[in-house]
Image (cartoon, rainbow, N blue to C red; front, side, top):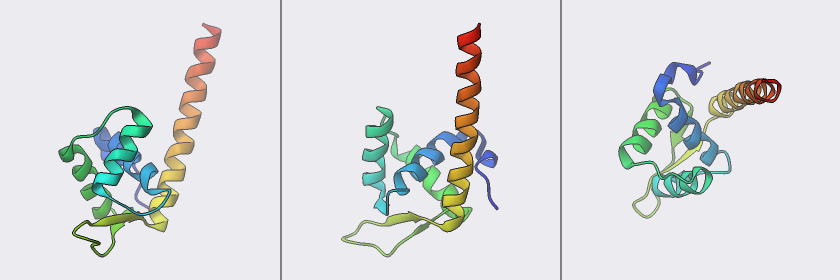
Length: 104
């Protein structure tokens, strides 16, 4: 299975794209809007489409047929599994960090 760790410094934009697509297919501009709403930061087109390209190359998302000159994307089953594992990893990391802050 393709994990997200291999994306290195590109993993955060990839995770944001996948979280956006977890609620259903979206075209790039809608993904960009959704990420801006979630994170209060709007990814630039290079960051967004770079993440989309890397995710598509790894089989974690796939392009759907164009609709009104827009190309929507959706998570694959492998993508759903990879996202779930990554979010579990981040949950554990955050819980450890918060626990350590509370006891310091």
